[in-house]
Picture 1 (spheres, rainbow, N blue to C red):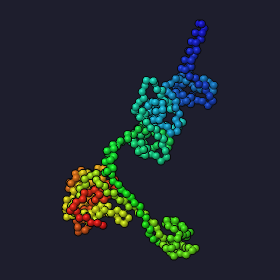
Picture 2 (picture 1 turned 180 degrees about the vertical axis):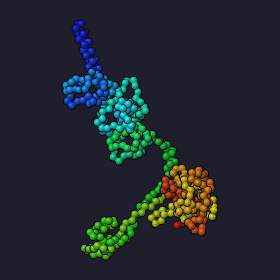
Picture 3 (picture 1 turned 120 degrees about the vertical axis):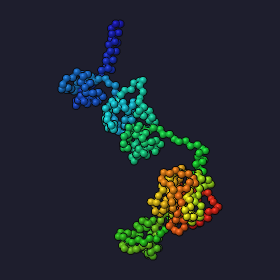
Picture 4 (picture 1 turned 30 degrees about the vertical axis):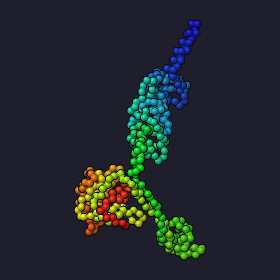
Length: 407
């Protein structure tokens, strides 16, 4: 009985010792530095643990005691970064940096062995690295940038850089990025209805017209090749030029060729209500309407009025330009409003505001000048939504004393 107790005690002590004192058998080609890196210990600790003497030679088959450490070894794989590794082992990025004496910008390479601090049962990971916020993992694809990834997940670029310890703006294909879950804006049904009522609909219409051009035949040309170039048919070119079969052409010959010209016309759909209460900048007669088609572009309206008539701000806003550097408009004022609207006031005689001024609806911002360098006075007025010119008459309330001119 005593023998069995002593035997069990000996086995227990042997097991405890084997756990505490790990041994490694030296292989051919091994060195102290290689063994130390393999087990995440220092060469100095390895020498002291085995009482090695200078010149610290080791030989195949030699058994070395490996000092116990508080680290786990991790070989860096393709696409991994410090944030991803820290999340995997539930430790902080800072603790990995400290354990491996990494220097800024904390670059790690594929195949590198990292010492990962063992996490104690009661310790908490540092929130400084942000790993607890890593709700989403994104693998970088070809052509992606920090900006496109941030837009995709509705987060800030600076948050992606902070979570992944990225110092510059460079990311690589295959890299795993930790993404903080973005906050999606919820829209109430009442707001949706309101936005539908106040939204602007811009219809774009494609118009295709044919134009006859003169083409000089080059060496190697054929009717089929010319027809393909101009989007027409061989029979159409032959008909226009009175050619007979077999349609022989020669270099230097001039041919009439129908060419397709594509125009895009924009049409503003008029709504029942407008989001703003735009007021007329001056009282007067419209002498030129808004036109935006393939034949003509006049992206505002010309309002004729008395010379030096006060020009009013059509809505509350901020002056973003006041000057005469754009010759086509003469002296010009541009005001930025909410909801991405801008108003433009051209051919001003005297400007009463400057860049950065905040104006209220109805404030005098200048006086009417010479309209299009003619003897008549007035202003050019334009409204833009998201930089797209729209017909001001869609947004301005009708006034009975305004005499409109139809183009």
